[in-house]
Each structure stands twice: as structure tokens, then as C-alpha cells.
Image (cartoon, rainbow, N blue to C red; front, side, top):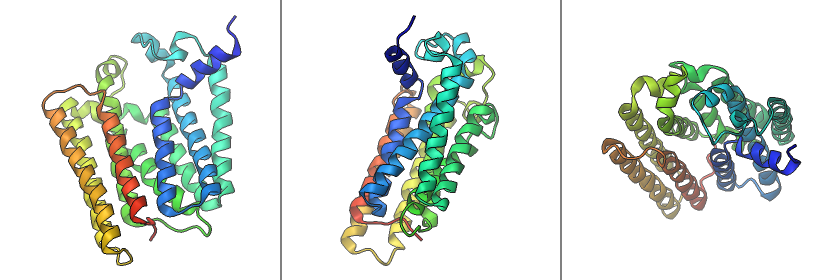
Length: 286
């Protein structure tokens, strides 16, 4: 009989811990850029963490049979280390916590976060198998800046360019996260947009989206009359670094390099860009 600690550890591995932590950290850095304040930032971070746990767990819960079919040894649910009931109950609890915490920061922030969560669940429940697989990432990551700015007191609407940047990162995240699993997915009937494009075109599209995020950020900074030359320069430095990472990623794709590290490259680019916006004091609001 398994004890509680091994089950908890297996459950944690089922949350897609890398992406879950990455998105949570990204939300905290966004909160710093907006000047959210320590108390509200902690609540926001816990809400985003809970939401990402719910999306990660539900993904592995839905895919347990498929993961078992292709012999995934890194999936605790497929290996029987976590029961479907435990995963389902945990998913429900953390989902309520995620929504409740953001609604505590204000109804607008709660609704924006609900959009993010519903997008993730919609992907898990079926859209991942269709040509519309990128839509949940466009919508979900596009909503993330709104979750943060609307969590401020008083709530502030996000700048339009920040929403576009979030959506572009969503495309890059989706494509690079799927690339290593294209063959396994094809064997089990998962044929999303990256699968239809193929490894080369999907990889190039991912880093083109990353380049779009950098260019749109630069445009947003240059059009912001409230920023000093120094602050604009700091933000443009991050945009330039992001553009450089997009070119580097495209080169790796063209050379047929390993795809496992491409997702981490996109997350690193997101953190670089948002950190530079925080240093520049860009509030990301309309």
C-alpha cells in the first residue's frame, strides 16, 4: 500500500511542474511590472499556481490512456501511481481555489483568470486534437496580462499591445511544447495545428510568433509618451534580446536540432522580456 508522501510526489509530477512554475513566475514578474504590491502579488501567484496545477492535472487525467498506450514512463497517472479519483478531486479543489483567489482580487481579475483556465481545459478536453489547437493558447496567454493589471487596486485595463504580446507567446509556447511529442501524438490520434504543419514549419512558426512579441513590445514602448529615454531603452533592450532568441531558435529548428530545449528557450525569452519591462517601469496598462 502506498503512503501519502509518494502519492503526493507523484501527483506533483502530474501537474506539468516545469510549465506550471514558469507561468507562475511569469505572472509574478508581470505583477512587478504593474506595481501590484506584495500582498496582492502573493494572492495572484497562488491563484495562477493553482490554476496551472488544475490545467496540468486535467491534461494528464484526460491523456492517461493515451500515455499508457505509447509507454510514457514519466506520467504517474499512466503508471497507476495516482488514481484517477485522486487526480480528479485535486483538480476540482485547485480549480475552485484558483478562481476564488482571483475573484478576491476583484471580479474583473477573476473573470480574466477564468478565461485563461477555461481555455486550458478546452484544450485538454478536445481542442488539442483539432486544427484549432492554438486558439486556447492565443486566448489564455492573451488574457494573462489582463489578469495581472485587473488585479490592481483600482483595476486597470491592459494595454492592447500587451494582450497581443501574450497571445504571441501563447502560440510559441504551444508549438514548442508539442514538438517533442509529435510522433507519439500521431500514434494516438492527436492531430493539432503543429502536427498538421509538421516539425519544421511548426518550429519556425513558434519563433516567428516570438519575434512578433518582441516587435510589438518595442512598438508599444516607443508609443508610450510617459516613459523616459532611459526606461524606454531598458524595455527595448529586453525586446532586442527576445528577438535575438527568436532568431536563435529558428536556426536550431532549421538545422534539425533537438526540440526538447525549445520550450525552455521560449519561457526564458518571456522572462527576459517581462523582466525588462519591470525594470523599465512599464505598467502595461491602457
